[in-house]
Length: 89
Image (tube, rainbow, N blue to C red; front, side):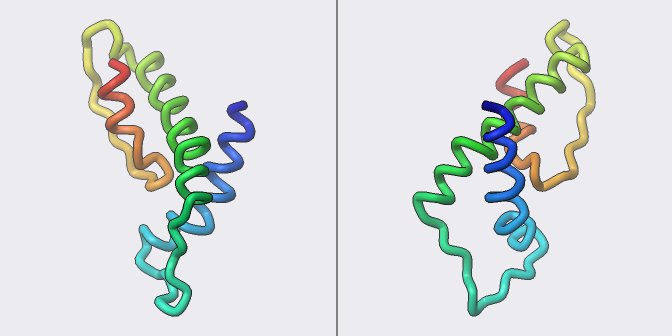
């Protein structure tokens, strides 16, 4: 399941849409079409992959032991990570 979610996250959502939006280089004559398909890859791809990263961050950093670490997330592909880590801890 995670392999399919990663494909939706990276190849369907992040590369063709999110990257251009984050870098503000979307061609105005080809504005993004945010439709049910985009919502689907958000829910069944982007959110799932970010949750998997969040779970690993919590497990690897000792957050669950009560010592919240400083975590710096730079990548736009991990846009949900901060909220998900906070919710998982």
